[in-house]
Length: 361
Image (cartoon, rainbow, N blue to C red; front, side, top):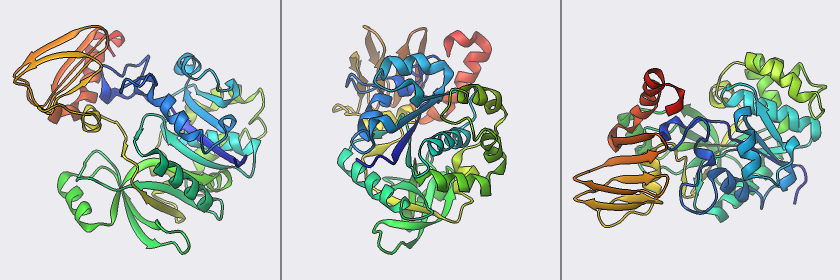
């Protein structure tokens, strides 16, 4: 196994669109959605461990989740868990991790993964990551994986592919990025055959991504570069606590990927879903003859179709006449909501917090 290959797993998100299952104190990456006995984070670590030495897996999370990380992944060294003192989106997360890894190994190449995605085709995933790492290790390149779209989904960002790359089948120059288009534009993208879903999976060398930050996001770069001498030392955590809250809250897509001129896309079919919403989980789950999905619970449903039932705990759901609904019960909150309106759940969570307090979110 190549000792210069590293993985950064981003696992600090809240996942509010999965409320009430995903809560502030235990968001969706720490949940077992499929009854496998493993959380989405644990499955992500398992998936990458055949490619990257487990000692080279770095977890970046909010300090609030340090205990859950250690509970679920006791084998991970404490020095490999980078604890953010504030939430600042993916660019600061990635910049910190790249500086940390570069200090340990200037020759490092890195695959950066979300912690809460579903990948059904694990062999194809392994092949794509290995080929992608070979590609970024051979030049100053930033690579993302593009997912073959199965429909005009408005919940994903899109990548437009350009010219092919000689010697690397399936890898093309990126022509453009588009964030979450409306339905009509998503249909146009699908019909063109040039657009793919943005998976949020990135590959690069530590050197290349740090150069990209210097060039395209100097503010973030300068904040983290100011502590060059502390990375990989006992002083790193103290330094991060002092500067991290001052970092701009910006995604890696906006900060780097949409600006850089050395961005490439490898198109893949991984049986992938970002599991970002209840509808995404519904689509990824087995359904009965009526199109209903039950997640680890007992359901007695009459004249119900196209609905999802999820309960945390030993409780029976009895329902009648529900068509295309989410019924999700967890702790002190019960959600009964049309699947078609699920994009409003994040707004609902904010309203619940404002009216009833933190205990319900």
